[in-house]
Image (cartoon, rainbow, N blue to C red; front, side):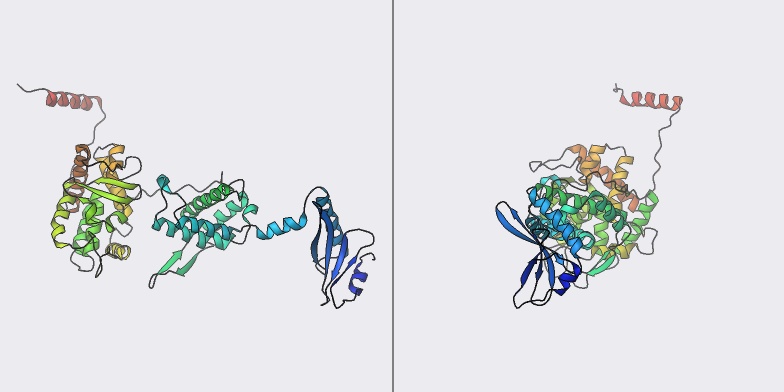
Length: 440
């Protein structure tokens, strides 16, 4: 035994077997010398009746003085009931963000993570979530331990995604497929929302006590408010008629027309099956929409189109793909091709959906009626026992679809606005009373 000084430590000769030299002034503090000549500082202590040994670190990275101070701190923790060796082992085993994300993905794919309406997430949602986890969160935080993540870390992560630090183009499993990861405010908002769900999952699993995303200030979500004007509907009609002249684009032009006439989501029409079409009931009975099973009223122009096409279409899907019984493909590429170099270059299927709802509002229908028409959560008709829709909904679907169809065919309307001067209002009341009086 001797006092461990720099000169002494470097002078100790290695032996054929590793050995330990203890400091004669500080019991429990020692130097382990390996046969290779490597040296490391250790501390020996007792915890819960067991003798434990903890390696502080290698000589060179640690000096005898810094290692002695560390040894005093470790022995102090042991004296108060701690176990530094066990704590280090737990730290080594501590879950990283990457590992947590993979656990979350496995449970999500097994249907154990519930999404909207308390239902397991859909395949498309799972694919999107997996992309956000593996392309944004894991590259920036993957090696960090879950228990160490703080709210400032979340704020920095959000800023990095907004700044595009995860921008990359990656290949996908599809033939010649690629995913362009751009980042930006919208991506950051949705990714942080997903990460909040992952941390809630970790809280429920007992991995952490608090969700570090709670209370995080996010950028204001930019609401997509683009809608078509009546003149743009007429332009859309011209574009769709031109598209129908192409064998390659005809079916995609028809899909866009049906979206414009129904306000449905693009996936609901692209993947529409004949089994979901109820021509007699003037509705679509969608078994698996974003809101779950839902009944969607459709107007007479849509019913007439489906009646006309039914005899000429075989297979499961209303808009079939080629060769095998599947839904038509390449829709995103085709709609972009249809609108390219036109005044409607920025129009998407969502714009058509939003425009349908806006037109219904212009025509005087209530918010709850519009929600039922487009299958929004506020008014979605979801009961599987609904066999006959309310005539009010059918009338609303007829009115909006008929108006949009007329615009697509080039019609121009003049709708009078309600004048707010007293005389005009009084005249309107008197006219209403005259029209309401019984005859005879």
